[in-house]
Length: 330
Image (cartoon, rainbow, N blue to C red; front, side, top):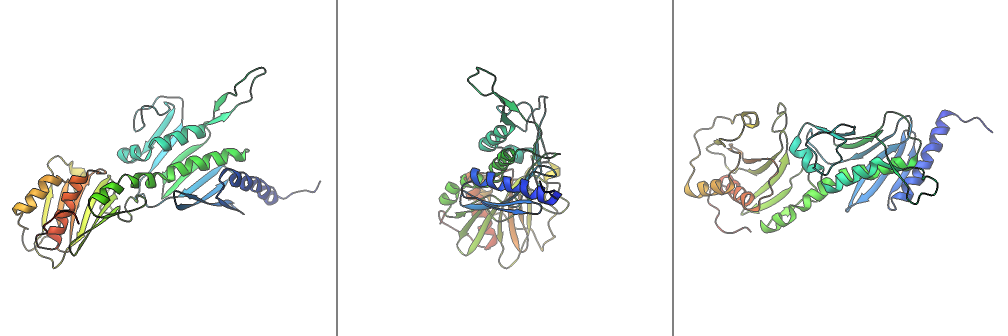
């Protein structure tokens, strides 16, 4: 029997992984490379780029759109932990994050189900036993960070099927922005706008709406500036025509830590007329900032209220154009 070099052995191992992934994901494209297996998997009309390996340590990574510094870690323990997890989530699951509301939103039912399914492996059935026992495997951990979904273990993974299990769980986490964006489709339709196919935290707009000659965007983001520690927000923004007076409004109940950076000093304070006041009352935003070149209205958290978003969009367009915009959503 010929002596095989370590690289040849590793290549053979990943050849098995290529075969396993190709069998598990019918539409996947796989390629064995020096550092593991490169995978492209279409899900919900989007192709996800992934990387998987069995050695020197088990690891799966899937690229996701912008997460704006969001971090989430899921590991398996034997102790009870409290939220951010759903009440039906496994009580031996430890969740660590730098954004509790966003972690709760990201771990929806499909993501939680996939994570739990990836934890269990089939044991060897006992003699005369009809069912196969399921055994808990706590060696793999899961993360969302640096615009990647990761699954990893500290040592080698000997079973290629387990890596395929982790790829399935990672894809369930990676496709959460697509499922989340679907929630905003009826809102975009009601407001006469266009919704994105997936949510990007701090990236491309979630909604685009046109009011007269003004384009208004709605984004989800965590950080308003480089020094911001991060807090999930919904931001309505419009470019302002011609400059003019400035304004800063902050809701009384908003914590000081969530206040936006100070507005630039303008020539004078923008007057709040009756039309703007009615829209402000309907939207009830956390902050409203009118700068010389744009209007920015923020809500604390991820807002999916059509009426409040609609009022904020109307107000942003009204102040951005420096004139009244009358009429229903068009």
